[in-house]
Image 1 (cartoon, rainbow, N blue to C red):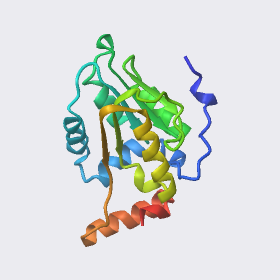
Image 2 (cartoon, rainbow, N blue to C red):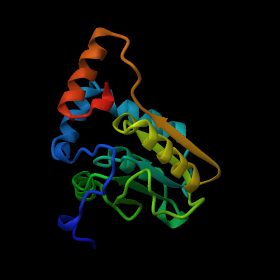
Image 3 (cartoon, one colour):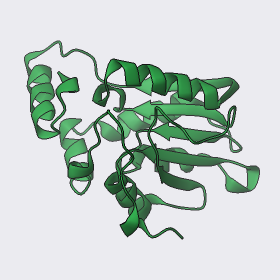
Image 4 (cartoon, rainbow, N blue to C red):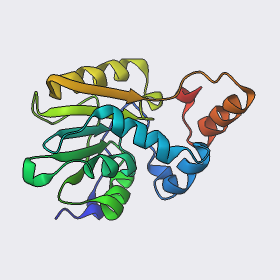
Length: 184
């Protein structure tokens, strides 16, 4: 087993949320207005998972969605779920809380995946892409398609420009709390 205390965040021009890792699981339900469980379930449902599927979660944070996906695949059938994040502290929390034989985590930047071509049935990303600049979004998408098997599924769920006062308030608060100008 890897000593998670020695993990280092991967260098990236994108932002990492190492500073929020210990409170992320408390803050996410608040920011999502208590709808995070349904949000994650909608993503899992859209993946149309089968027991043998191999799934990659880009920007997995503390691994909540990764773990939920892993509950729908079976290691004995070849299924697995790998969550990656450039923030080592996020991965440390994910491993501590959610790691299992079918659910693994690794420190890795989405724009530079150290993974084999055509090795995943699905690639998913939830609330990650708004944290990175446009050129890294393009590189991350290119990498996602590279590791995705022909006929595989890519599912991205993320923020959009707020259309209400409350949405703008949440977005503005998140921008400053997470020190992420890309959220604007």
